[in-house]
Image (cartoon, rainbow, N blue to C red; front, side):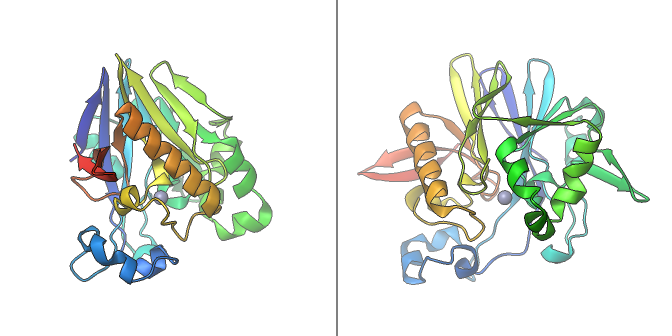
Length: 279
Ligand SMILES: [Zn+2]
């Protein structure tokens, strides 16, 4: 089942495609000591492990269905305990068939965000969402298609290159207006082209932060950088800017990697400190 919010006239549905195995906190945030976790234990599981979720979104906007990222994909995924993705079933549960999707917007090109882009049958790729245009940040394309980088990220060959060959991929630069209600906002660092996705409708505003935030703990501790952040300094700058914007403009924030029930919230300030207030 999807969780949902509305931003003006836009309905935002969140689907958890897959729950990966939990991480040791030090493995995920390598520069954060065990002591620093002290006040944040409730952001971990009971055994102290850090659990992420692979959430992605479908927006219903002005008669169109827009996916924001496509999860980890069908699998089974050998690097994730052979777990499998469930997105297409979850979409069907909301009455959304692959054919209904008009656009796919990628926050970035890591494997847990591009997984359902392409379906492979007997060695032949086809777009899972056959009518959709797939949008990706050009700076990510430029980075991840370098031969030595592509070797380390097989998802590019599997889930991005075929779209380009089929003419379904569109590369975007800077702030890009996807529709009158949906805009991408550059938030680089996690990857070179990483974007957040801003929704504005009837005076209401919300933002999908992509991997600028992996865990709720980063709202209080924006300096905590994930091992996967390619440029940690830029990533930190982007995270701070997004948190400032979210707090100042009262944005509804959607974070696909947060735990279920926490994935929609607002950034609020109490006695000089920031907190995540679940919506
Ligand atoms: Zn991710």
